[in-house]
Image (cartoon, rainbow, N blue to C red; front, side, top):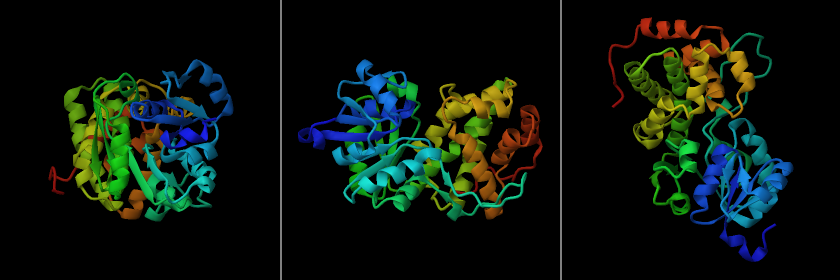
Length: 352
């Protein structure tokens, strides 16, 4: 436990996975950090040896298994947990939160309320109200109104090694952005800002779909022309999906959009790229869905967005095709051939 006299010096991180631990390490350059791990056994085992998720912990990072302690000791909290666990985490944290708290999440996923009584084998149609970003979820499940997110080309392994990188802290609140910049910035990590919270969140979510496709291309032996083709058309698809969900175009043209898209579509450090690569190399979707050690948010995102596009009565050919590979038995090679045959709109870009 931390003594009460030092509580105001701490910033909280919820989630001791690979990215959560990396965020804690970045914050430790500027503040003392309280890092929450879900399992008490994890904190008891890792505190003495000063590691979490394989990363060495700075001396000013303290592990805890108590959410009440995080809320009591920290005004600024960074939740970094998989989207599928985010709502439950918030429900457990919410009783201890106060209006003065600031939550800046680092989760690139969506929360979904799936319709009940859907017929087996049928893809349910989702409406926008069925799908929440993490900031929308924070506001729904807590009294916190000072909410932000961080998103960008932030591959955890590179950040943990202190390699040059940058991110975007987004919030409609200038105070939230200022706190994020103050706490995260260091000589190797540049922080940009945005007031378009929804747009920045959707950038981080939607690029995961395209990254799976890029991994599939590489796994089949296709090279830079093909990947550039997919990235550019993927960006267009992201823009149209983002607009349908309520975002502006601007975030998709920046670091959290195009920047993150390039990183996750070209690096084997990207979980979603690696998932697509293994699919193309012959692993079955069922095997990958069962054996993925760390969450690939793109899997859930593909399913969610495929269900949403029917509601919007729009086409998203890359998303539709990746869905067919993951959930409908389409072979990766056939999927690529289909994307090359399908008749696109002859206009390259018409949203600027």
